[in-house]
Image 1 (cartoon, protein in one colour):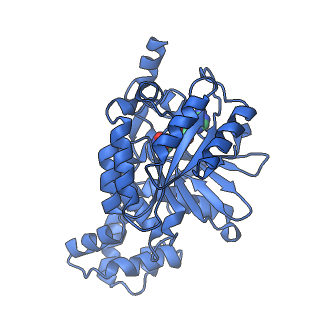
Image 2 (cartoon, protein in one colour):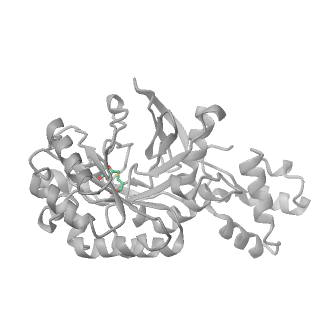
Image 3 (cartoon, protein in one colour):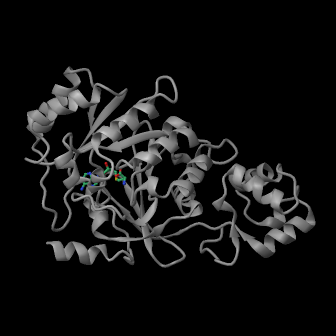
Length: 362
Ligand code: SAH
């Protein structure tokens, strides 16, 4: 597989099956060329158009001239003591994004990025400090999965993908949807839809659109049960407050039977971890089919927060479980290599100048 993207050529990994069929129809070809090509790429590991023997000679010549199959490139690999692997991957524009491989007994999860940096300014997340450069293309998103799978080898099949790396996936809607379609397509990577999760800070109109566009699992970064506090922690709340967010979640959960939303709640000492907060959570979450995932806060340089103590965390978990809300505590993985939630930073040429703005505020 070619590593660096040539801007002049069309990258065929930028299309999901529907997009690829439309591309071929645009060339005067039959739509089934899409599945033929996908079988070569995804099932046969063939990336050389000349080897794709069921395509006509003239089509192969056209593809050679105008198209490519390209992914980001691993430039740094770090392995944590618990086996977690973090990669910095270089994009064609010279920025670096991060992806994290998390091996467990019953699954191998890959956490991938959807944007270079992040335009949101969640106060407890270090990616926010990096500012924002641009959306990742579909090939850069799905490419993280192919590159990671190649790197870890066939005997460590990646079984789950979470879009919980750098960026807000629902602010890069079309490319993210095409990428997850490829991940779940039997002609491509073939993951089950329950094993692909998009995590969002709560972009309400996109949550509604997502339900109609594709059937992936949804996780929502809740982190507070009062608008006043959530405005501070997850500032997009000012635009889409809790009431609207919960309504969108209820609608999303209706898409399929037995569907539920995972709510994420970062535990910040003295900020959002009182028993009042727990009671508020119970009241709020009773209205949606859901599970709750408590995330111990992972520190980063100059962060103003501390993680709640163990006792508080356990008390919170017990209270919620006792109220009938299935609640788990996320295991912190890879924190010795800064690979844990909210610690991914890559290397971002900030175009939003957010970094400067944050410094001015401080
Ligand atoms: N933009 C997406 C993906 C973010 S990362 C979103 O907001 O959901 C995945 C989860 O890690 C989110 O719930 C995010 O709020 C949380 N997170 C961010 N920084 C963190 C930190 N320092 N410690 C623990 N969790 C953090």
